[in-house]
Length: 369
Image 1 (cartoon, helix red, strand yellow):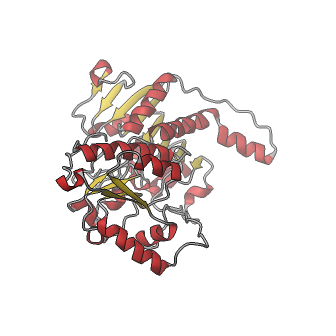
Image 2 (spheres, one colour):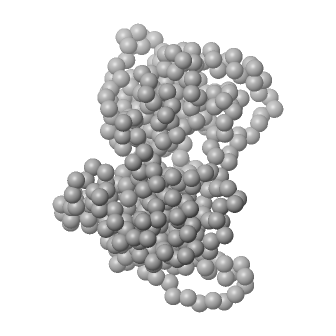
Image 3 (cartoon, helix red, strand yellow):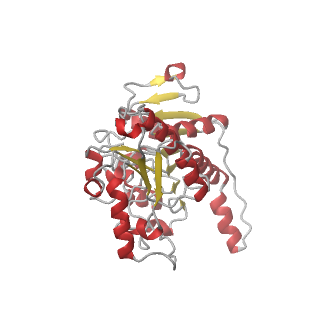
């Protein structure tokens, strides 16, 4: 999503005063300086590790991840006092989706919250999303790494890499016939920045591309789609057609009340028995119980899953033991360039904010993203 719901008008006092910005997640020093260099009117405070811990109310930065402790930091009591002092005057916060429920009251001058995630599903019920505060996401920065992950998953299944690695680990020579991607069909459920990039890479390898977009009102074919990388553009009502036609189904839709559980038993049974489903969006888009049965009973050929209903994936999950599943721990969008891209987007939005221009990726609570 690259459109804004409107501009934030900068109060006159900021023309000569300072706009206080708080960085509530780890940001490398060189990236902090990049933010400060946007405009001399910015007063940027990078929270310490302990202050970030207090800000998140003890919750982990990401599922299964904990920041390392630093021996020379302030105590939790000192961090809390300093954090409240910072928040009292903060106007802009750069944060991941772990945002405290009371942030609106704790930061009475807060006008804009920039997230480093593309999705906002974890915050839809949070007071900040439906408050006076404008919330923006990092939609678009994940397109390159996640589309490459999708392509890698497609190639892994087509070329039989999982079975080859298993045979290698067992020291067994087991020849097999790999598949070709050229001439296959990929169905992309969700045509945002990630879906569009997947379409571009897929077309480059000679795949037929079907794409589903929420705003599409009818099926568009060929030149009607307005996208040279898409053979057919489909409305959500055409999901059964997309599933029946596709050799690879890519789940790239945002998680909203409408999309939660959109891939259940009926949808999985509508897929080809030779098809592979790839989920890089949110785990709750797929009924995991139905998916485990589909994989175990071979309704479909396989799945590449980077996201799950619960993260970390519980040890008792049936998915761990299945030989036709490729599991990764929610890493498809994370590369060493992640924060660099997030900061570049933030800097762009900071310039827009200071100029009174519309911000990018403004969250619409009614749409859910």
